[in-house]
Image 1: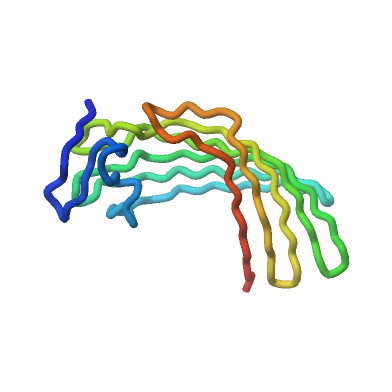
Image 2: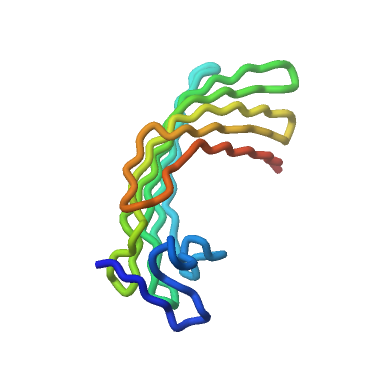
Length: 163
């Protein structure tokens, strides 16, 4: 069941995202959520394989809206090249994202849920206690419910300080 209904709390609308401000566009979830995370790395000499998987368990917020639990799996292979004081690490891998439909008052919420598989490539440079990197994600397969905006390429940048 899907419903275009207006909430009575602070003017927040829960409905078809094409007609109202949808919960995904709000500043936060308003719920207490839990993340389970597992990561593994196998490395021999300068080559390695890594994978991480996480599962986010979402609870209901005060508007009785519940974002669906989400699953992510990210396997990759990498190589580390030592250039004196700088190390570079090119990586190639995949990223799989999946979720069921969100819920409001226990019923399914329209235009939510589905799955996407991305191919990705990244390059990270390490110097002393600092790293800087960039990762490019390109969708290979996606099966999103209803009339959702399709995923396009993503570009993630990072700057880290290790202490």
